[in-house]
Length: 208
Image (tube, rainbow, N blue to C red; front, side):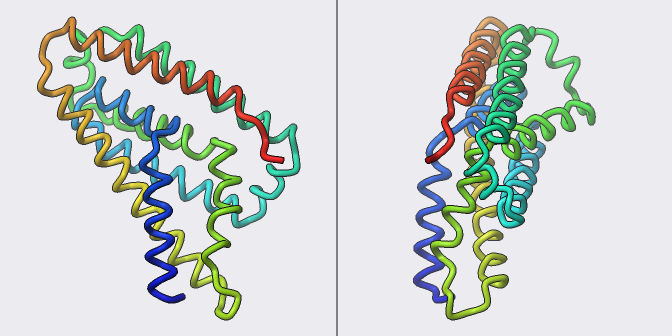
């Protein structure tokens, strides 16, 4: 693989990742709700989710999703319902109790990681995306496996960096706002964003 192809891939992946989708909406919403302490579990969850989606794509699930309306719909509805659940939960959360419940709580970190992982890994568009996107940058003149490894590692690094920057910004904003009423308003904005992302996910259509 030439350095020119790698740079082109990195630039294209960066543009795609910067555009907020359900995963980034989730990251921002949780970071606003929980502050900068949520950055690491959210980034780990997103990275693991992208790794699973990428692996499933390379194993052939992406191609199956592209041709199977039933499987696409199952994953789509699981993701949509989970986003709606998280949105309602965040909307109803009480910011006055969060400081007591969350402090140094391993289960809370695990919950944040799990949420980011599930939303990222179960997005059918992400799985199909890797099948359509990665092969465009693989040269047939060289072994495919090392190229997929380099491209995959690059994408995961950029995805982690992108999620981390979004989470740091949102968490920093939250930590500067100590007023419970303002935090409740942010929680409801984040919850509303997750609910909207769930509705949008439910309307996804399989690529023809």
